Length: 446
Image (cartoon, rainbow, N blue to C red; front, top):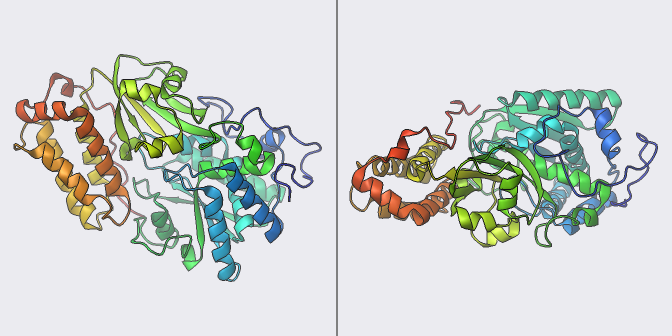
C-alpha cells in the first residue's frame, strides 16, 4: 500500500488534492454543523483501505515517519503505539480492540468535543484504519454521555457508514460518565469491561491486556483524525507544517481573558502570543497564562507570549502542552483564589482509590483554602510545596502528578501573593467569581 498514493477508491471518480497544510477543521473557530458522509468524501476522498498485514505495516511505518504524537496529553509517538499493539495482537491470535478516546474531562478543553461534533467521519476514518492496521475486530468510540452534540453526530455518522456499506467492522459508540479522570486509558478500558471508569493500577497497560483482556489501542480522537489524513496524503505532507521535532497542526482551546474564546487549529511552533491574537487579543492586561489545563503550568504572561506551541519543546522545558488548553489570567483576577479553586476541583475529582489522591490531594486542597482565606499557619506555603513533591509518582494514575505540577508552578510564580494571603486574608480581587471553570461533574463513575 502506498500511503501517499492510496489504492483506487471506488467512492470518488478522481483523487482529491491534499489541502495546503494539515488541518482537521475548516477554520478557527469552527462553527458549522456536523459533516455528512457525502460531504466528508467530497472534501477528502474515500479513506484508503488496509487489506492485509503488509499494508498495515506500511501505514504504521508512515505514521512513524510522520512524527505524529498523541494529542491526548501524553504525547507518545502514535506509530510506535500502533506497532506495539499490532505485535501483541499477533501473539494473541490476531485479536485486538481499538478505542477512539473522546472522554475529555478537562474543564478548560473543548477540542475533542468540537472535533467529534463537527468532523465525526474523520474520527471514524482514523478508528477504522487503526483497527485494520493492528488487526482489531472491535472498534469503539468512547466519550462522555453529556457531550450530546458529539454523541448525536457520531451515532448518525455510524448509521451513514452502515448504509453506505463502508466497513465490515462493527463500530460502537459508547458513552460514559463525565469525570476528570474517566478518560485515562485504563479507566476507559475498565468502563468498556463493565466496571467503574476509574484508573487502574498498572501494569499491565491496555496495549498489553485491555478490553476483554485483549491487546487494546486507546488513542485520542484528534490523534486518530490526524492519522486518517496521513494515510490519505502521506507523511511528507504532514511534516509540511509544524517543526521538525513537532510536525503537523494541533487543536488548541483558548480561554480566559480573550475576546473570542474557542478552539483554534494552528501549526506547531507558532508563538502563543500569535494564537492569542487569533482569538481577538486580550480583553484586559494579562498577568499570567495557564498552559496545559489543570495538570499544566502557570507561566508569567511575558514568557508565555513568546513560548512556541511546540509539544516537544514544551515538554523539554517542563511545560507540557497536555490537553492543549490555554487560559489567560488578567491582572484583575487573583491567582491565589484561582489556584485554590482548581486544587479543590482536582481533589473532588480524584478516583479516591490510592493514598496520594485520597489523603494527599484532600490535605493540599484544605491547606490551600486556609492559605487563601488567611486562616492557615506559618509555613503552610512551604508545606504545600513539600506535599506536592511527596505525592508525585506515587498514585495509581498520573492525576496527583498533574495536581502537584500545577501547584509547584503556582508557588514558583505567585509565592509572594500566597504569603500575602496567608498573613492578611483575601484580597479585593477575590470578590470576583473564579475565571477558571470548576464545575461539579457527574457523581457517578458508571
